[in-house]
Length: 378
Ligand code: GLA
Figure (spheres, rainbow, N blue to C red):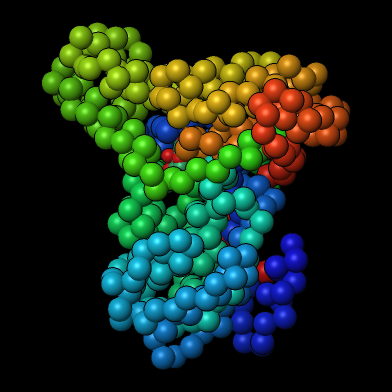
């Protein structure tokens, strides 16, 4: 990462923090329904160098956006909440709201997680900034608490009603494993990636903006479904508590769109557990089938896929050695992920962009991602 070399040329008295992007293997749009997800930290990072200052000013330079912005911590509520700096200011705001001491700081930021591509670049930025600010302010780093704080930054400061998956992955990921996360209890179970497979990220080349209303709208549909379900099943507090049979029972009470959205979530929320089991016993064919089923559901029921994602996934599945493929992350553009035999990975990565371009008329990219550690100082 050229940017990281630049950060290391910063003056003395600075700390450098790294946090990874993530790829979600399965369990999409289930986190804010208190269900299961199966993400892994990837070997693409956001890096933040921090030097503390004592005048209460937070000043940040983005190497990649070639922009410097600053805010006085006492004015942080009034900060303009746009672009990359919203996440930086939002983390300082959330840290202060939690009662942590945050001194001012100079930050320099760079990264190689593609932005707006479904690989959680904003959570990587948040957790790298949080890790760096904690170091600069001598605040204790507690990974899970910082993930919750990152979600608060997104929900209350930036205005995206996201769930906990991305921040939890960026904060707590472990080398060599994905993690089955229970988004209700926040319990995390490591799921080692078998040696005979690799995860390949397939970038459609089309970017989305998560802050568009579509994401928040999906969440509202889920909440509406829960309200109606509670009339029949008062014990239900989230879609996590429902199975497909109980949902079918109340179909007549829900408008067709809300029913479709809820059906996706209810079916999807058990797939991460099934996939974790499949990976544990090396049943790669079944793991791939689960990914394929997840994509169909996201496309047809949750309506968050795109023409390019569908083309990418269809192209991937035709290739030798591909067990399954699906869109990953929020959707509306961005990346897909494929489960590929390690022995076929080189050829797959070489050929996929050509075949995708021929099928979709759009330039894309393919790269292997390795399971990497969560936010840390380097
Ligand atoms: C985004 C959000 C996550 C999650 C996914 C969809 O990445 O930040 O909380 O909801 O979309 O699974």
